[in-house]
Amino acid sequence: MKKVLLMLFFVSALNGLMAQKPMGTNPNQKNLPTKLEVIAPADLHITGTGLISAIGGEATVWDVKLIISVKNSGALLAPATKLKVFAQNASNNANPWKPFVMVAFPSVAPGATVTKEIRVYDTDRVMNKIPRMNLKLKADGENKVSESNENNNESSIILVSPTQ
Image 1 (cartoon, rainbow, N blue to C red):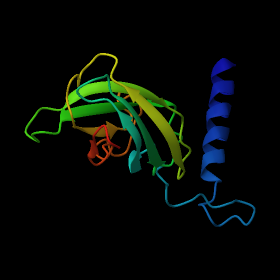
Image 2 (tube, helix red, strand yellow):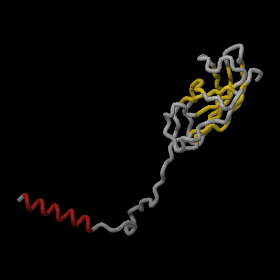
Image 3 (cartoon, rainbow, N blue to C red):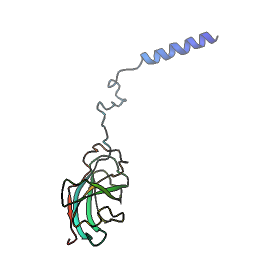
Image 4 (cartoon, rainbow, N blue to C red):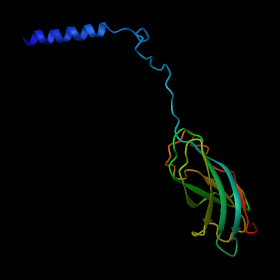
């Protein structure tokens, strides 16, 4: 009895498969898309920087205010991250870039640009007693955001002197 039921089940399943019509021949059946769209991850890049003010140099610890714009050219939300600020003694561009500070930055929606004023303090005295310095910033400084292009996160160089 079990064999007969199993055989009937197999035959009816096989008939059901054979009775199916190819896609597009049944007017009640919707066609599936023929092309898959790939969604690109977030892609953060710095689109603008500006120096607002700078106090410091040889006599005191650096206190720098900057304005920065970060765009997400990707298709997914970039979560809140940190900007990594690098500093270099501006007296000689051959001097090494040193990690300066990390600054919190909010999330950026796909296609959006977020502009924020940031303040950079040299609390660790990385550029202590340096009269002029260069700064550059890196979006996603901790490299925690999966991006479609990890090589476009740095800003151009910003020259900072205490008279600005």
